[in-house]
Length: 155
Image (cartoon, rainbow, N blue to C red; front, top):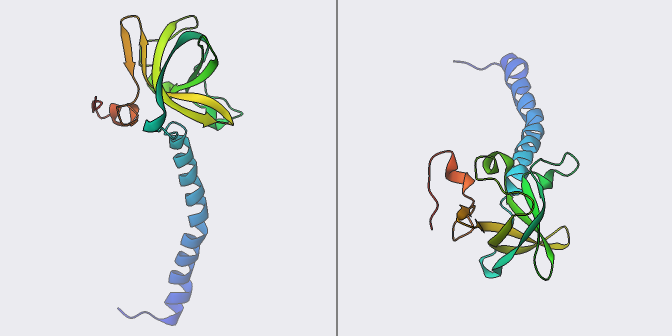
């Protein structure tokens, strides 16, 4: 097959231009997906794992339209010394778990982080009476990552 100059100008160059013009839009869309996933892959640090005990004073199940980094389920837990924001997991995953309600007394093991300039906890295990909710494995890997495929946590 012989490629002529006319074929290059009328076919190949427009295809290359269309591809180049589409790349920035694809990259932005891809970055948005990565940021959404990143919201619950917060910097779980094995060196800052601790257990707190307290009462749920507020719980939010809905994504915030004003702040996409607040998507998912969050709660405020009042301990004997502080009130701590706790990041649980994505709403779609948490809706499949045993519900946590305002007033529940919990023990939460997770990684202490700084989020928006304030201390917070990324929960790995939540215990209420006889209920134990495993949100992350011992390495901080989110349970919902393999949940749809039926994978189990490495405990």
